[in-house]
Structures are given as structure tokens and as C-alpha cells.
Length: 69
Image (cartoon, rainbow, N blue to C red; front, side, top):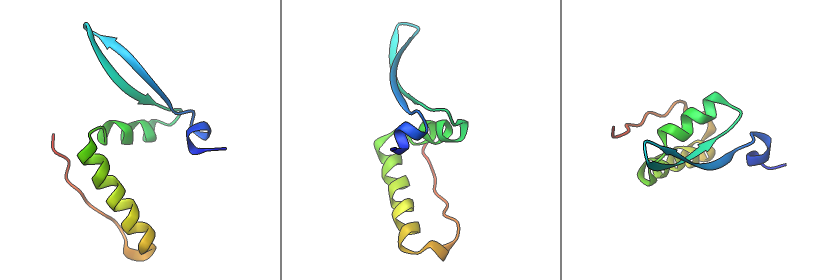
């Protein structure tokens, strides 16, 4: 199975107050939180940099990053 199938990730468009919003949802509240925090392209780029750094050096510890609000 894929991660999308394992966590039942779905992509939906919801209309709220006459505006359409593209959303991702899953069976995991923690994963939903990641979706919410990394919803802009620039934020996804930061997340991918962190993942790549962790894969290159798993013993490196924690990573901190700032999100523009």
C-alpha cells in the first residue's frame, strides 16, 4: 500500500461562505496538522528540505523552522 492509502488521505474542495477551499484530510489528526501548517508552496519547500536533511544525517537531531503567518 501507499502512504496515501494507509492514512486514507483525500483531497477535497469545500465551499465555505461562498468561497472554495482546497483541503487535504486523513485519518490522522497529527497528519492533518502537518497539512494545515504546510499548505503553501514555500512552506512545503521548507518541509522537504528538513526531510532531506534528516535522511542525509539521521543522528542530527531536531530541526526548527519558522512559518510566515
